[in-house]
Amino acid sequence: MNIINKQLSPAILFIVTLISSCSNNSQNDLVKINALYEGLKISNSLIHNQTVGVYESLEEKLASYGSKEKAMIWYPKAAIIKMYSDSIRKFIGGLKTGLANEKSEENAVELLFETNNKGNELYDKLIAYKKSILSVDPELEEVFRNNIVIITQSFDSINPGPQNFIKVFFHDTSKEMALSILSRFENNIHIAELETVTFCNVQVNNNYDGMKILSTLISQSTTHAKPGEMIEISAGVGSYSTSGDPHIKINGIAVSLSNGVANYRFKASPKPGKHSIQVTIDFINDDGRNMTTTKNIHYTTD
Image (cartoon, rainbow, N blue to C red; front, side):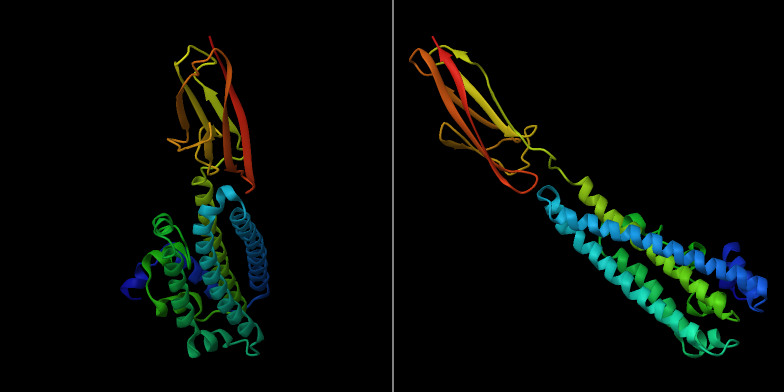
């Protein structure tokens, strides 16, 4: 055993022992392996369904005015992760099909993974997959650099190379056990995809600064003024937010927003009596509809 193999964790050594113990294909071993294989298939299906739901959530946010801007940033990143994930799952699926259809029971695994060099190819693709999804975004890479497991946690941390990968997982291994190991790698891919696209989805949520229900807010400093006294009107959308892209006119004059508020000061009419100032707010509601609110602000002078 070389230095790298000596560094393999007990968890990986346990896998080696398990593979070796099952290589004789006893009936009890086959029952256990098949149970493991079926369990992984169910797990992969459940995780896949969860992931589909995340993609659908991101698509819905693309169609919503309030979240569209952020979704347009993060949805393409999730789509790239999906592309990488689908590609490697397709490759692993091809290995499983080829292995299952191999008529030779004794050396099917050796023929596929060692003689035909598919073990090296699988190892390279697994390592490349992790690097690819981490490179999608710097924030994603920072969060998941040490958290994504592609082979096993211990093996990933040591990264002893393709030859040790083949030796640990496929050398002298039964066809049934090899299929289960491939399903386990698929499971790792499904989990990595779910975690990373969920991260993309959460970024849209965390950065969403819009409001579910937008309404206009208009206030005035006084309703009863002396002739020539200054009156101030404040107008905005929501809780004085810039969400909704509001455009405000007060007394027919376009007023720019400061911190979400349009402030307009004018002198009260010198004529005694009741007077009014019109405020018009054009904005886009959360569902993308153009809305207009008009309100007359009343005041009285002595």
